[in-house]
Image 1 (cartoon, rainbow, N blue to C red):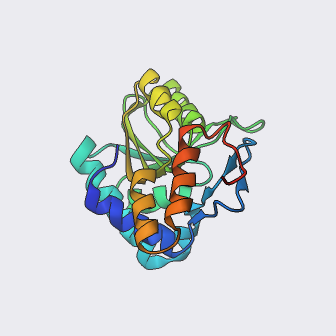
Image 2: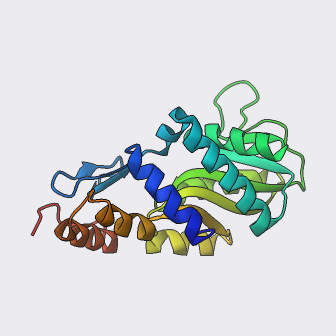
Length: 216
C-alpha cells in the first residue's frame, strides 16, 4: 500500500517528468524476466536530480518513522536501492547496510554488507517492486543474520497480485511512495498517454506474464 495519496501523486509526477517511468504501449519493452511491458521504470535516474532525490529521501524518512517508528538500521537492496537507502539513513541519523543478491564467493562471503547486530530493528529500502521475489530474498538474508525486519519501503510498485501474495506469505509489510494506480491517471491528465493507451496499460497489469504485445 502507499504511504499517503499526496506523496504518491507528487512522486508520480516527478518520475514521469524525468522519464524514470516510461510509458510506450505501441512499442513495448522487454524485461529481463522475458515479459513484454508497455511500462519501464528505472528509479536510479532520480539520483541524478538533487531536488528529486532529496524529496524522495525526505518522504521516505517522514513516512517510515510515522508508519513503523524509528528503526535501528536502514538496509538497501543492491544495487538499485543503495543510493537512496544511504540518503535515507543519513537524514534519519541511522546506520546503513546493504544486501547483495547472494553471498560473495570470496573473503568473508557476506551477503549483508555493513555492521548489523542480532535483534536490531531494520527497515528495508527498495527502488522498485515487481513480483517482490528479489526484495524478499534480501529480507530473508537479513532475518538469517538475526535482524528484526519491521517492514519494507519502496519508491514504486506495479501492484501485481503475485507481489501482494508473496509479501503476505513472507509476513512482510510493504509501503510505497507511489504505485501504478497513481501513475496512470496523471499520465493521461499530463498527456503522456491517451485514453486508448490507458486501456492497454490497464490490460497489461491484469496478466503481465501473458500479455499480448499487439495493440488492439
